[in-house]
Structure formats: C-alpha cells, structure tokens
Length: 57
Image (spheres, rainbow, N blue to C red):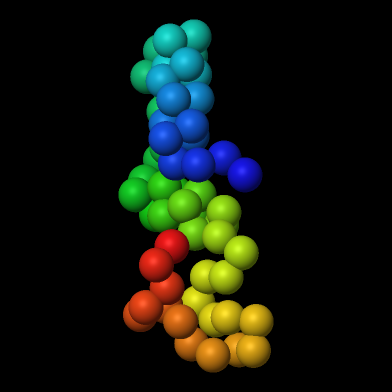
C-alpha cells in the first residue's frame, strides 16, 4: 500500500524527469481515487454497514 505521502514523493520524482508540462495528477478527483483506493473499507464495512460518515480513514 502506498500512503499519500509516498505517492506525492513519487510524483515529485516523476516531475523531475518528466518531459515538458506533463502532469502527475490531472485532477483532484484523481487524488481522491488514489487515497480512497488504498483503504480496505471505503464506504461500507464488512457487514455492509454504511461507514463513509465515520470511517476514520
């Protein structure tokens, strides 16, 4: 699992070697997808209880 800090560090490394105006992220939605995609439980827990309002992750 890549934590957000590691992901952003990787982005900095990419930018140092990337050509021209290429971008690591194309939108804030992409960043959200990276963050939420790393969680085991996102919107619902294992018993399908809605947890998006109180999930500490």
